[in-house]
Length: 132
Image (cartoon, rainbow, N blue to C red; front, side):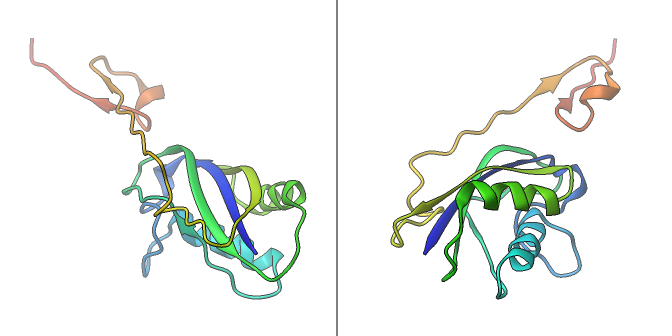
């Protein structure tokens, strides 16, 4: 059975979405959490990728398992395992032929830029500085 996961994350502490050798990634954390909950090693496939330090408010990924799971329970359990900066919003069963990456209808990117020094925004927006 195939399941879609909708998640959000603060990418500040990660080297992007995709699994990388010797670097922490969001996909690696999600794979680890899925493997803890399911009886076999499980890997997810994301709808896209983000770079180091980039955040996602609505990323979709899929994973396959032979185990029947209650999607709402799966979301709850994943959120108990995942770190605070990764949150699963929804898990739902989908047709086996659907693919998170290849069947995505659109991808939307938002870029936030500010020009005044603001420590609160330092992880969430690019700062442009201008000489007086």
